[in-house]
Image (cartoon, rainbow, N blue to C red; front, side, top):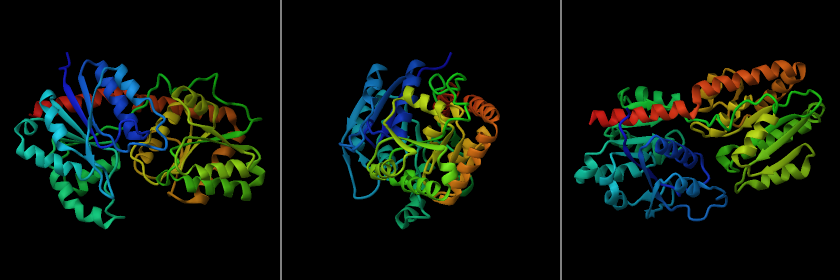
Length: 392
C-alpha cells in the first residue's frame, strides 16, 4: 500500500492563468488527490488580469477539494514574481513535501527561509522546471547561473520534463544523477485518443493543418504568419488543397486576423475546450508548432495522442516527443522555408496514400499512449515524492 502524503505546491503565477504550467499543476494535483494524497497549492495572484483568462482551473481544483492559498508577491520589472516567503512559512508545518515551480529568484528566498526556519528545513523540497534560465541570451541570467546551481544543489530533487534539461543538470552543471529526475509531461488519453471513425481519411477533401497556441511571441505566431503567407504565395497549386485552422487566444491575435482576412484557406476557431479540441485533432491531417521556447508542450502530446503528425520546431521537449513517436518533421526555429517544405512533404505523403497516412497516425497514437499517458506519468511522480521522503 502506498504511503499517503501531504504535498504543497508553490507556484509564482496566478493558478487561473491559461499557461501550460498551470494546466500541468491542475492535472498533477487532481490525479494525486484521487490517489488519496492531501494536496494544496500556494500561488501568487499575478497576473491579476490576463487578456486570456479563459480557464476553469479554480472550478476544477475546488471540485477535487484541493486547498488553495493565495499569497502576496513582489513583481520586479523583469522575471517572475517573488512569492511572499512568509505565506509559505505559515502553512508549511501541515505538509510533508514542498513542490516548487523553479522560478528565479524564488529559489533564493526559499533557500534563505529554509536555512533559518527549522520547520521548513526538515521538509524535502523538490523543484520542477517548466522553464529555464537562458544564459546564452541574457547577461543577467549568465551572472545568476553560479548562484542558481549552488542553491539547487541543496534541494532534495530536481524534476525536469525533457532530456535536454536532464543532460544540462547532470553533465554541464555536474549535479548527481539521483538528484535529477526526468519525468515528462502527460496526456489524458481518455479524451485525446485515436478514434478510427473520426479520423479524416478522404483524399478528396482539404489537407487540414491545425495551429493551436497562445498568440504570444515565444510561441512563434509571427513565424506561423509568414509560413502561411509563403505557402499561399509560392505554392498556389498546393495551397488550393490546404486549409489552415487556428485555435487559441492571446495579445498577438492581430496576426491571425490578418491571415483570415487575406486568405480563403485560413479559418479561426477561437478558444476550444478539451473535447472540441480533440475532435479538431482527429479531423485534421497535420499539426504545426512554431514555438521558440517549450519544455514539454501539451499541445504536441494531445495531437500525438490523437495520431496527428507534426511539423515542429527542433527545440527541447519537442524533439523528445517527435523521436518517441518516431514520426514528424523537425525544423530550425524561425526557418520559414523549412516549415513550408515540411508541410509540402506531409501533404505529398497524404496525397499519395491516404490509407498509409492513416496507419501512420494510428502508430503515433499508440506510441504516445504507451509513453505519455497520465496514469503512467503520475505513478512516476508519486514514486519521486516517496523517494524524497525516504531519503529524509
